[in-house]
Image (tube, rainbow, N blue to C red; front, side, top):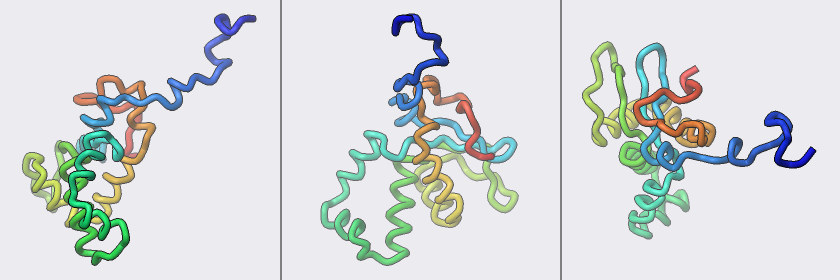
Length: 150
């Protein structure tokens, strides 16, 4: 049997296992939270996010990376970054029974700051490489191949 005639199940394809969709990484994938709510999340290390991080003044980055900032400063830094680069949109989200306003960076920042567990979940999803697999070719506007909310 030649390499060309191997059955699909008999080989490990790097593209299938480790390939990623650059479009999904930057534009995001919809993640279901609960029955109807969902959020649009970009990959943590996407090129746009890396570029934005590098635009932060070097002195501020050094202070952040060295851990010489207060918890409040660290939280603000993280929430601003997530709201501007990672969390892209939301649908059918509520806070204490009231519908969240349309997504903007400021609204994202407010709710990421208010709810630590929401912030942690967004970070966790953005860091899940499997969500941005090559199989997710048309991620924006579609549900991902698996739900991150279960």
